[in-house]
Length: 477
Image (cartoon, rainbow, N blue to C red; front, side):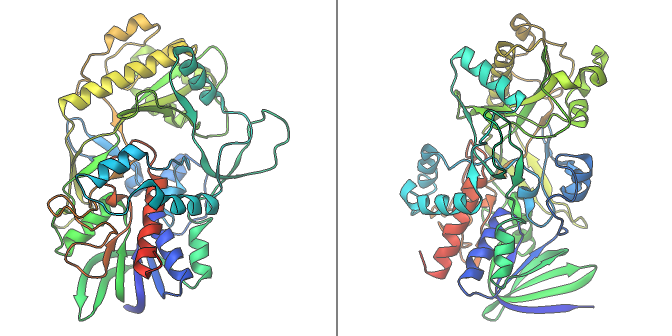
């Protein structure tokens, strides 16, 4: 049965950008309807970082690729709460040099550190952003030891987590991730926001003074009439929706990623266990453009990370407790495009890595391997097909100075910049506060806004900017 809804503000998408937009506007008395294509699942509906979670909460089961040479598989959420429901909750404020880069040449206004500080502070308070009050995970400790032995800058990254009271000094504390379904979405609903999951937005049109969201719910039409629309579907689906609606200027033309390559390490002592978690230690010695950190190291992920080395006879069942996975990533260029394909719901994503990017990735993986050997690793398995197991620093000469496009396995969990913000009309799709150029009361308020890859985990930037933009819409800013 067709449904019709009327509201002041429609929010399309319920990830970090959409959730804080809905919470901020609802708390200030706006009648808000928020729709989400995916299902509403509790944070603990399945084990974190499990195959079941990939089936439940990931778009395309985590197998959606950006086509190029090499292809880069994308990890995107498709559920209420978006990426906050599947990530590690690692949190950074936007670095000052990145803010300066966005202010010029993109000409983003009101983007000084002092402008964003109250928004960072509000988000950090609402999400309980903090360091783990106990000791680090074993993989994190290995990364810290390796960095310190090499004299490299390293840090534990705060997370949006609530922890139980610490029982003993140095004890590793487990906690509950403060995802959107734990925080801003309940706050929005308490303030009157109507959340409707299982609704896919197909197109936006202008109806007199209103916007109309043409959507589908269980194969039936679902239409929203709203005074204003905030599109918060993520760096892929946001430009796809705008382009389906005939809005194309600088939309979906400048997608940026943070491509990463993984290395599985074997140590002499146990570093792995039954509880799947991601260590919060990161190495920032070479940032930007290179960063290094811990990855998911459950047995299924270890199997994926070592699939290029099956002929090496690695016995995962015997070794997995002594193994952990790490990543090296670069801040990739704005070299991707998002386009719709006739008769297909899935957008076509293309992303081109330059020769210099492949050289940066080679440098990054060599740095990571050096660090892991310094931390005591006895064997390393990089994500480069045809590369023999590495057992010492001398073996790093096997890694070419430019990674081979046909043998390198990359992935990314961070996507941005498909609708960059600013007043430079030749470069940007939306203005400094997210309003689409030339379209009154139509806003973008998610990772698409970020002008370039920020070089750090982006959730802090997304949340602060989304809150800032929502308050600007209400005239409270």
